[in-house]
Image (tube, rainbow over the protein chains, first blue to last red):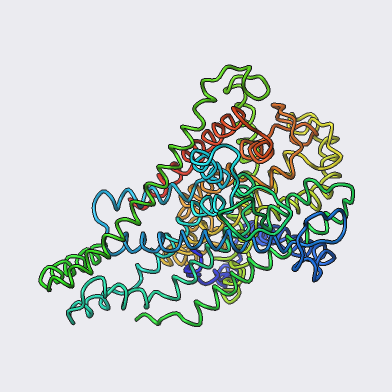
Length: 307
Length: 317
């Protein structure tokens, strides 16, 4: 995360001289008031987070069962059945998206930081910025338009979702990888060159290993960012009740779309469907949090001390 | 930057001086990097080209062939209005809170816990939008109903709170607030970074002159971070414009164009409209939806570019 590198300036101390000199009580009162307001605003901003985690946990637990993780939803009406097809779909779609995005993103970052010059470099920097701003639903429409051109209208495949997610993931990977490569000190590269190492070997054997922890962290955070995407998958992977683990054949379910559909069309047994939607939400939040925490741990554990 | 350039040159010199086998490895690797760079540009070009080619038929189609029997412009205008309205509410709510949260973390909270507090704010950005949607409709919406009633009674003379107040909470105001929570972390992170970099000589100088903590913040930290806050707000706005699921789930839509934020009939947004209609559409309706996606892309692009321009100018200074 970008903000991880922020250095915090020490909190401003209340100057003792001010209080002693008996400066106007108005100014002191205003200072107090604003401090309280700012602290209050922070507390207000935290309420949604607390409420969200609490509600998702409370409402998600009733729907969780062994069946939720082991069974699919084929022919299930009301209670029973599970979301194993959605969990497998999430893993496959995200996995394929990562397989597309990580090599392209990291090579792109290597280009920017180690090779890039002139117009292509400037264009790439600029357009990666543009890419970070693409709304997720637009990425979905792109994948849809692309595949419909080749396979005809109405096509729905797991890999279409992966392509849509790649559009969202590549700029995140390239940004974080570029940041990490930038802080690899030049004297390491120069030392390698001085030993007669070719440039590509210097990158592969010196630069990338030094940056390894940061690269892995960046990739994990990028995956955490896309694993819960709903909108682009809604228009690309379709809806299905049974297990399908082949991204190149047929519709594929995933957890976020599953939660949306259970909410959207609950059928007759509303509560059962809502329970499943919340259980899927809880599973999703657990996956995202695990990825975030793991990313932090990897960074702490494996980061190379750079002097 | 200049350091990198020196190394690049050194690397090239060495590469040129060393044997042919080495140069082959270098050539293959650098080509791969260039291919990756070009692939990314091609992908983005692809996004634009496919949206234009698939959306184009809708621009020229007759009104009778399009959904709702309207010309494309009449079709997209209320959606664009809803998109901008929801995002504007989100930005109005989120920016003051985000700035206050950033000030609290960088200049008021004890430095020991500041890092943790920042991490908590960042966590808001990690939560998938589908979950915000479910939270909005099952938790915040019902909780907001009495507030909406109160707004109608006390502030009903304002067009925003005209009412009749929704009994479900599925209103523009609630959707805007959920969007605000979603963009708060991005605005706050950018503001935090800027506030933390306020030169110590400025804050300490203000304190030495006897300024209170608030006066120090107002006279040094806020002016220093101003342009970052503006660009952060615009990036947040860009995020809110394209946000889909939360609005899709929360808002009860009717296609009405109204400033009434607490009623049952609300304008939809471009993104939510695509998510709602796309799965059941076919033929020219698909083209029309893709064309609205293109309009959304254009709106977010302009917003983001403006934000980048503010950042660039600030870096220049």
